[in-house]
Length: 175
Image (cartoon, rainbow, N blue to C red; front, top):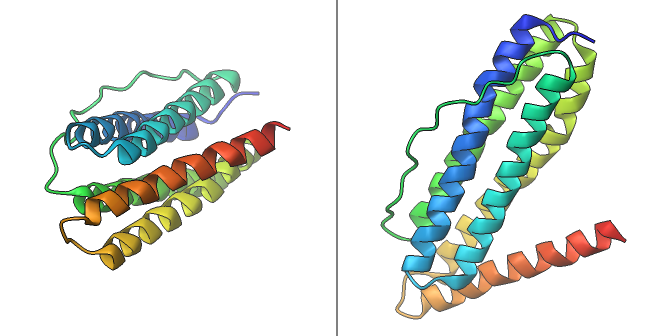
């Protein structure tokens, strides 16, 4: 199986976004740790790990179908934030960029009649929907909790719950 060159090029462009997402979430985890938001830091580290897995899935796929995966240059992610709300808003924006890129790849696969890559991308279409919904809900919850002196404690606990729920879901999936 040989991947169409146009699809290969579009996938390689997308690799840069996945790499940036990996490092952005890692930078966010570091910022949260610095701010004493342990639950938030765990959440963003887990997000970073997930983006690394996504990067590798794209990377491996390109090579598996006869293309050449190119290691992209990585831009310095944002490392300083005003507050946890800004972190989450930036996360949503980043996820929306990834979604747009995946939709663009899908368009190219359809133009090139590349059903294998179109099928490969279906997982990521669903994943992006989940990510965007998750960050919209987190942002809504932060607005509900508010900006009072104790709010960061409650926000951090909400992130801790997300990490715990994700760990339970992973254990269920493994059997």
